[in-house]
Structure formats: C-alpha cells, structure tokens
Image 1 (cartoon, rainbow, N blue to C red):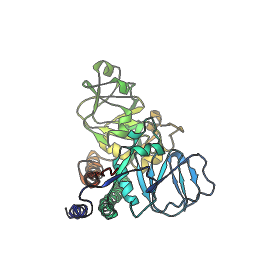
Image 2: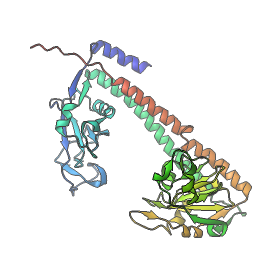
Image 3: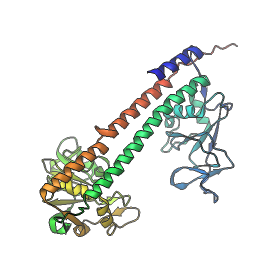
Amino acid sequence: MKKMHNIKELIKKLCPNGVEFVELSNKELFKFYYGKGNKIPEDVGGIYNVYGANGIVSHINEYNCEDITIIGHIGAVGMVNRCKGKCFVTYNGTIAEVVDKSKVNTQYLYYVLTTLNLPSYKKGSQPFLSFSDFKNIKIPVPPIEVQNEIVRILDDFTELEVELEVELEVRKKQYEHYRDEVFRFKNNKNVEYKKLGKIATISRGGNFQKKDFVSNGFPCIHYGQIYTKYGLYANKVTTFISESTAKKSKIAKPNDIIMAVTSENVEDVCKCVAWVGKENIAVSGHTAIIHSELNAKYLSYYFHTNMFYTQKLKYVHGTKVIEFTPKNLENIEIPIVSNEEQEKIVSILDRFDKLCNDISDGLPAELEARRKQYEYYRDKLLSFKELKVENKE
C-alpha cells in the first residue's frame, strides 16, 4: 500500500530508533478544560458549539474552539471540532487543546485518543477523567511531519467512510420513498381497503422475561429484540425458553406478525417482524400477535410505511413510555390486493431491503468492511516503538 510505504519511509528517516511517549498532563503540549455547571447560557446561538447530553452545558468564557478535541464523560469518545466561536462543554465533558501545534497535530491527538481505553484509567459507573488521571496516560509523539502524514492517511479513510454513509442514507430514503409509492396503488382499481379487525385475529403477547431464557428449548422472541435483533421478517430465533414456560406463554404461528406495542418514542412503537419460520414460537408481553391470511411480509412492509405511521398517530399515547393498545390495531385500514400482487410487491421490496439493510450484502457490508480496514490501519499507524531516553545523571 503506497500510503503505508510513505509513512514507513518518514519514520525510517526521522525517528528510526523510536518516538517519545509524552504524558497528557504535559502542560507545554496540552491544556484541558472541564465543564463545571449545568446552566445553559442565554446567548447561545448558531456560532456557538454546545457539547453534552440532555442539553446540560457549562460556559467556558470566550474560549476559541477553532481546533480542539472533545472527550466524552466516559472517556471513550473523542472528536475534533474546527469551527470558530465560543465553546460550551458539559459538566462531565472535557476539552483538550494542543498548546504547541508545532509539535502536536490536534487531529493526530484525536486519532490517538480513539485507540485508547480511556475509561480504564478512571473507575466508576460514569468515570470522569481528572487532570491527575492524565498523568497515567502517555501517548506517542513522533515528529510533526509523521503526524501530519498519519492524519492525511486516516482522513482519507474517514472521508471514504463518510461518503459510504451518505450513499447508504440516500439509498434508504430512496427505498422508503419507493416502498410508500408501491403501497399507494395509483390507478389500481382492484385494491380494497379493510380494517385490520375484519381480516385478522389480534391477540396480546405473553409474560415471560429475559431471565427465562435458556440455552436450548422452545424458540421465542422477546419484544425488546424486535428493536435490536430483527428486521422486517425472520425465519429463525436467537433465544429460547423452557418447555414449561412455553406452555404458559402466548404463541405465534408461521405467517404471523409480532408487533412491539411499547417503546421509548413514537417513531419506533409498532415496529414489527413477520415470522416466516416453519415452527411455532413463544412471544413475550408488550406485543401484539397478528394472524391473518395475508402474506405476512406484505403486512410487515406496510406497517413500516408513512401511511401506517399516519394512522398510528391517532392511537398512540403516553409520554416517557409510548404505547399502542393492541385493540386499536383493529381500526387500522389495510390495502388488500390479490395473493399474486402481494407476492410481487414482497419480491420487489425484498431486493431493496437486502441492499439497504442486510449486513452481509450491499452497502452496509461495504461500510462495515471499510470501518474494519480503517481501524486496522489506524491502530497500525499509531503503534510506535518507544524511544529509550538515557538517564544522564
């Protein structure tokens, strides 16, 4: 790889015997600012930068944040900011400034920080890195020419990753738009709209919990997994419960829809998975089980359209916890077309879904491969032999 070849030549020329490792507490090179309060300044505007969770920030007076690194409250996340203006930082956040930019490239500092397990330097449920903690953290500081070349290489990787993320987002929006268009059935006189309660049996899920999972047993889906483990359809499960627990549980059959009816937000509530496996499965509480003669994947795709979302808004309730009563599902109108038309729609949307969402195919796989490649070269580029400094005393 030509890029790696160039950096090797630089290292061989400028630091063949190793590089100096410097403590982050070195005041000649680094300066740290900490958030201290929770009052939001009244004059925060577009030219300012606010860092932190839940809008809780602290003012750093007239601090010019043209080129800095941000360390999150758990010490695990860093980022470089290159805009000009005042800076605000959370009470549990840290800003790292490079004092001598002739010796340390700020972007280089950021890349180094992303390789460190910073929370390990400070124990606790939400570790906060104090100035004394930085005495325990040493980073390699090669000649600035080497740092600049490393930054150039890693910036190229990052730029390619961003381009893939943008392309993936565009593809997803195209897919969502096309999916909605498919279900509008323009100029289709054979479509009929019926309330779900007229064409389906809707029941509530059971009451087993995650603590009931066993290594082998009766297949099951917990409602939380609908958000984290499954896409729009599934033919195998990842968890099991005992046969005795299953006998007391609610069961979904092949071609049923399993819908989560409890969520933290309106957007996610009613996320569902079509069960297209060949066996019955147990279903936990906070769900609705929808059984009908319609193609389950057809229904699942429809339940992710804007048309369904608009109907859903009429019935969701709650503030901190958003809920959708299974009984209200009976009032949702579903476009009914022939079995052949349902299969055709499913076939088309399956291809789009695979391209956009399957981790083993399409853009997501390419993006994942690019991230792994970036992490590999980042760690390789930032691994230096420490220069042994002889004690002259």
